[in-house]
Image 1: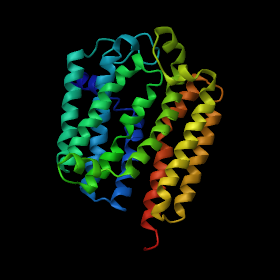
Image 2 (image 1 turned 135 degrees about the vertical axis):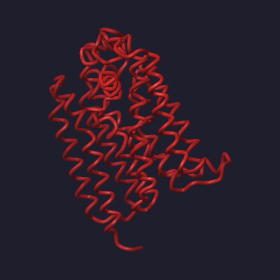
Image 3 (image 1 turned 135 degrees about the horizontal axis):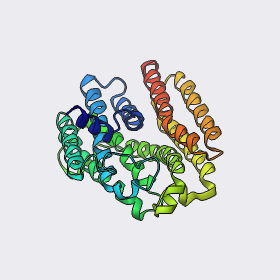
Length: 298
């Protein structure tokens, strides 16, 4: 039993929290923006626990979808489903259970958020298969990994259970932040794809690192630039305390450091850059939280 539990924890990447942290910080930022500051313990717990659960469920689905490819990639060949230690049925059952637990948390918010969570689940399920057909599947991942943003606004604002009510619960700012965040996902997941480029070329997998070719490093830096500039533009009207800009500059410094890591396109350095990305969004979240708490009264 203990060995089986270890396999399940390995399947959901329990020892690698960077994955769910990449999801968490943008969602919490949106929660703070939508609530105008502290959102309350209930919504905080829903989004933190829900993020961990959905990322874990996504790992189950992804490993099942990619099992025939992963055995040909050095970094993923020993994943539980790929090596046959966990069956496809087990992995899908675990993924479904975790997704239902996440949905149960969403059910404690409001009906509008529940409906948007179904859309988020559909995008999450589509991503593993996008790598077969889309030259930049990281864009699909970007939407999936950013959908906590509109859900956060819906959780705070609520609305009538009509088509218009569901749509109006998510303001244009939320979609703008989602688009901004998508560029950050393009940046860090391209770094991730640079790690496996040789293996992915050999097995015919489509990734942004392959599509961009020799333009990969400058495009990653361009993605970071769009993310940081557009994120600050959306937050400008909030009138945050000047401390926000200190943290924004710290995030910019991290992006420049990533250039030093990936410019040589070395496998280990690119993987390190990917794993450290969550600190960039954590820095922006910290600046937002302090900037909103210390902002002068209107």
